[in-house]
Length: 515
Length: 116
Image (cartoon, rainbow over all chains, first blue to last red; front, side, top):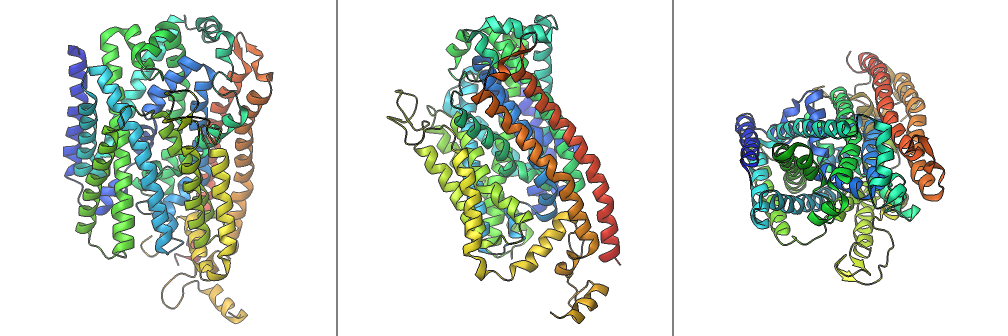
């Protein structure tokens, strides 16, 4: 580890800790802890959404995937960006209008039953744990590679940092860590992209000609199908990407940090531009790494290609740039895991403890205390899981999280807002069916059972052919919602009144007497 | 609930216990008009972007027409993908512009029926 690495690495840590210290002074109430008191402006929240969303999977994962597989890696960029149209057109404003701290609040605003909120909280916790495990294991491996620190120490460093942000600074600190990370990530990516383009003589079209012969894939590098040979499998992955975002609890939670639906809307607009520009630049990261680092060198460092971006930075800008990009990757992981801890803690402390167990009868002090304890619990569990999972292939954990979000959360969120007949039975049926279908299908998919030795936990023929089960589990979630609703229809007459209120508030943003 | 009750409520959306009568509010002309306008405007866009998005894997998975060269060695696959980016940005701006109009309708509605 060089002088540059040390200084940039510690500068990032010092800056984020200073922010946490500043944020801690203004984090007293539950609302401040969970949502920064709804005080963020449109651009701040837009940057924070980008910071929360552009995880290590986006930065390191897509760059690596494009460098190794060409266009097939770019599907992630297309899918994850288009997902924001779903969020903007269907979810963002009604969600802000109906919820308070969590996604379950919004569903609970229509269905008072404890089991509905319980199912929503269960989904949140499951998604958060899978997503977090992927980030922590990835972080451990990354820091081990970059700085030569042992895996378990790396995981502990990241784990303790994320807990410190959330515990002391709540959503205010988490948001600002995400904003700073978004700025660092964009700066790093713009510098690398510029250098790559310069190497290609600023000839964007000519770059494709050079890439045609730069990799062992030849012309196939420029076409779809290097990885996704089966069209149904490809459609399944793309469905999970485009619908999953709208059900990710840590992304949805960000919409409660602004004061109203108009600000939620403008924050999505900022996020769409930042995220979109970033994803365009993933082409330069991927092509640059394939051309100037080379496939063999990338695979030698990490077989999934995760080190392609930092390696490219090293080739283009030497030690200072590589250290800067490594620090960016570190900040990226910290920002994402902090957001995850917060949304996991809110599901436990707000949904399960305050609303279900205490029936909403808790003081501000008890709420915040419960939230801090839950944050410690979520962090401890995920650190322990990560410590035991060093050898785990983590790529599928992120796609599983997206798949559960799309299958278990999205049908219920959409029907809660838009379907008059939807009821408690439909909501619970949909959330549990989506969750269980996704989990079971992944458990019997090639991620877990694979004929190639060492590729998964067990050797053998998978019972389910596709890596991503979205094409089955998303329809299952929707069908369960519809079937459940009709089965339970007779028992839920009072729901009409609740729907009228939800419908009116969702469309107008009217918040009752205080609004 | 009989018609006389309904007529009485039409004059005053507030219930006697101070709660708003949301069942009546969503039946007001202004609200129905707003929902209809939103639906008419947004639905075609939502259907269109899903269709355009899912056409990409269908075209690349089942046909090879996107493998032809478009500009130099940039194939139609890439042009289509870049087109998706442009589509996302354009639809975002369209949404924002239209949503501002709906904000005015909401203000009018709330002013007329809620904040008297």
